[in-house]
Structures are given as structure tokens and as C-alpha cells.
Image 1 (cartoon, rainbow, N blue to C red):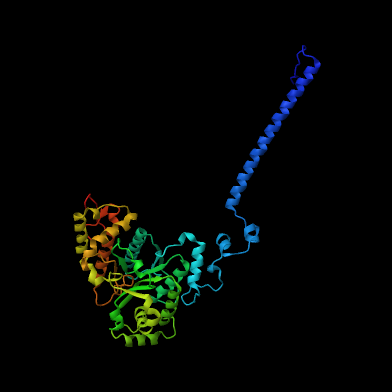
Image 2 (image 1 turned 45 degrees about the vertical axis):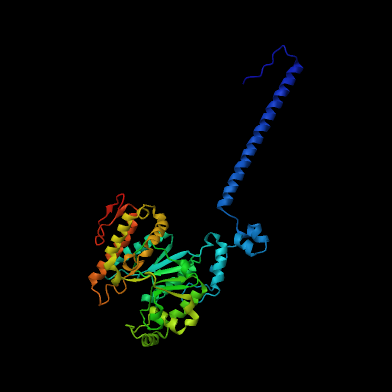
Length: 437
């Protein structure tokens, strides 16, 4: 041990004073170090506590706002997640009634302001059967048809739900979609419109946008012609394979009435007989959703008619037999227009599709009939999954037509990625775009 040495020349009292001063300095240093240590520890504790509070929020019982503040609409928006989903009698079933749906949606949107303010939010719903297709090419066609719809929804910012189970065991065939639509309404209160598209329908104009502003005073949109329904009493006066239905109480009430014609109801066979007696050109004895809707328009027009819009100005649902033979010429019309009009051949990002679609709409105002791309081509009667096509068609015509329509649509998608299809009948062959292709 080294003992501190005091020079002999210093007086004893000076030596004591020096030791005292050194001890005082050492003590101050220790105190300062302690303060700095405690301060750092406190900062570290506060930081850890903040992180823990962020990842582990307090329970409502420990939250002073939740426990001491009266529940009001304002505080509920901030602190109470309770919505109509917590109601014990809520059901997603198409057969269960939902009351005050418009108010329930309004409250949900108030609690989820990110989704508020849009009257054009669309959810596409489509689907197919739960089992593999019996037709050996059926699953391939269903995959391509689904890809076609996904492409369109991605480009235009729509959500999509694909259902392949029977949500109601007795509602089969064309009736199955209403169970899916009803469940989608409850599952997606942010969606203003539910857009059902049959699995065998292809979107063949990727630029076209639904004219939702046009339907602002209506709650259901189907392809059809009023004079054929009201005057001719034709069951083909409208088609329900593609429809837009607003997410509202009116639609809930309409579907509750509509499905009474379906196979889950006790009067299914009687309704089939009645519908066939009223609509003389009806081919099948079964009660179907399309003829049932025509019946409601005729017999209950005062209740439903004002809110149902029958669209005939564009192909909301085009008949494939009339369309597929023209697709090659239509594609050439658009390519010729691109070569002539510089703004039409400008390349753009895929998300710029709305701008591009607007340019085409402006240019195509003078084009009518077959020269315009059909919005939707529906292969009704082809039955790609079961293979039991309508006997009026040849199977080869159905499959070749579907390939041509799907490639026609996919060519529009690929152009945004720098490629194109030189032959609509060849699904594998693509070529890179040049500057002015």
C-alpha cells in the first residue's frame, strides 16, 4: 500500500486543510457522478416504460378516460370499439334480417374515418363451386377468368372477394350468389357498392370505369331493357349475372324478398310455374333469380322499380356470341387509333390507367357498336366448369371464344408491362412493345 506523503516543509494545519479540501472535492465528484447515474437510469426507465405502454396499452379498467368519463358519441369514437358486430343477434345469413343497416353503417364509418367520404368504394364479389371442375379444362378457365377480374380490380383500386363455398346449403346455382353478397355487405360496411360478376364473365375493357355517378339515385343496376320486361314480358329482358347493388337497407330488404323465389323456400316449384306462365319465352321450369327480378319489376314496381336501373348504353353484360367474332377487328381499331393520335399511344404506369381510360373515352365518343371494346363479355350457357354447355352452341366455339376474349383483355394488361399479344388465339406468344406499337 502506498501511503500519501506530506512534504515536511508544510505546517501540520496546512496538511489537514489540504486533506479536507481533497476529500470535499472527491465527495462532490462522487455526488455528481451519482446524480448523473441516477438521471441516466431515470431516462432509461422512462424510455422503457414508454415503449412498454405503446406495445401493451392499458386495459379499459385502468384507463381514466374509459373508467371515469361518461360514454358519449365523441368518447366512444376514441375509446370504445363497440359496433354492430357486438350485437348478439347479428347474423351474416341471407335469411336473417338486419334492421337499421344504414345507421349501423353510418356509425361504423364515423368510428373508422379513413373509409368515410367515399361514395364510390366498390367490392367485387365472384366465385365458383367448391369441388374441382368436371370439365378437364374447367379449372384452367376459372383461374384465367379470376385473374382477369383481379387485374381489373388492381388497376382501378377495387377490393375483390372470391367465394367457392355454398354459404347456404339449399341455395345452389345462380341463387348461391345472394348469400355471398349478403355476407359481403356485413363484412365490408365501408363498401358503397357490391359488384357481383359471374365466374364465366370476362372484363374485356380494362380502361372502362363504372359510371357510378350515373347511378347515384339507384340501388340496383343490371343489364337490361325496360320495354322487354314491362311490355314484352321477356325473361331475357334483363340479366342478373352481373349486377351492382348498393350496400344499404333497401338492398337488404330487396334480397329478403328476392330469395323467397329460391330453392330454400317452401314455394320454389309454385314460383317456377308462375314465372313461366307470366314470361312465355322462359325456357326452364325452375324458378330462377333473373325471372324473379323481372317479376318484382312488373308486379311490385311501385316498391322496387324506382331504385332499379336497367343499363343498355354499354355492355355491363355482353352476350359472347355477338362479341367474340369482332374482337380481332376491335383490337386493330384501337391500334390504328394509337398510331394516329399521339396522346393515345403514350405509355403510362399501370396506376395511371384512369387517366388513360379518360383519354380513350374522349376519343371513342364518335365510335359506336362493335368498334368499341365491350366492357364485359359473359359466356352464359358455356358452363366452363361442368362442361355441360347449352346444346345450341358447339363446345369448341365456347372454349375458343373464351381464349380469345381472355387474351384480348390480357393484352391490355400486358401493354402496361411492355409487351403485347400479336395473336389473340395464342395464349403463350407475346412480343415486346416498340416505341409506337
